[in-house]
Each structure stands twice: as structure tokens, then as C-alpha cells.
Amino acid sequence: MSESNLVCQTLCEHADAIEDVRQAMVADGDVLALAELFKVLGDGTRVRMLLALARRELCVCDLSAVIDMSQSAVSHQLRYLRAAKLVRYRKEGKNVFYALDDEHVTGLLMQALEHIRE
Image 1 (cartoon, rainbow, N blue to C red):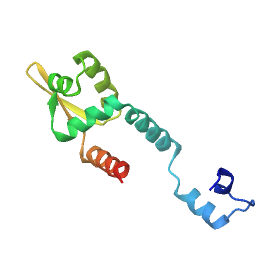
Image 2 (tube, rainbow, N blue to C red):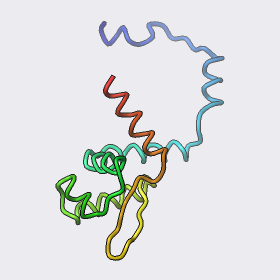
Image 3 (cartoon, rainbow, N blue to C red):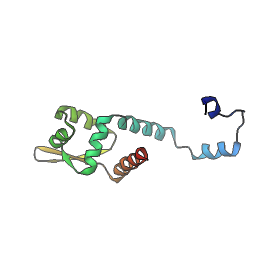
Image 4 (tube, rainbow, N blue to C red):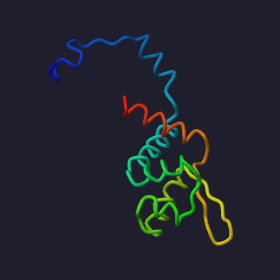
């Protein structure tokens, strides 16, 4: 099917559908926050880190070894993930351990993986 066949051939608006969707739209602030979340998830390195942390909590040294990057580079990416509230950390002595922030992050990752594998 050509691209021109993938749009309405005549101009028409369905007022009931438009009003229904307008009433259900989320606030602009939530739209921007969601767009920012997808920006953070738009980086392959950060996604690899999240997938590793979906398996188990890891210290920065272990995460660095798993994704084969320097600790400095890992720490830089972890800042983005913390700011997006995707990961949390805890200190144990001189080590810092990271985990996914909550089950919503795990669910988001697993649903996205399931979607792309269909």
C-alpha cells in the first residue's frame, strides 16, 4: 500500500472521538516527563545497564565489568538513570551498589522486550 493510501482521503472529524480523547489526555507536565524518560531509555548503554540490574543488584565495579566500560563511564550513565528515578543505590563500606528503583522499571523493560520480540 502506498504512503498516500495510509491517510484519510477526505477531511472528516469525528467529534465524539475527539472529545473522548481530549478528556483522557494527560497533563503537559506528564507528557514532558514521559518524553524525558524515553530519552534516557534511548541510549543502548543505559538499556544494557538496566537489563543487567534487572537480573540483580550490582556494585559499580561489577556493572563496569558486565558491560565492559570504565567505572567513570558507568558512573556517568548512572547519573542519568538516577535522575530519571530508574535506579537506586546503597553504600556498603567503600562500595556503591545499584538496583532498579522498583518493580515498575522491571515491568517497563520486560514489556518492551516482549514487544520487540513479537
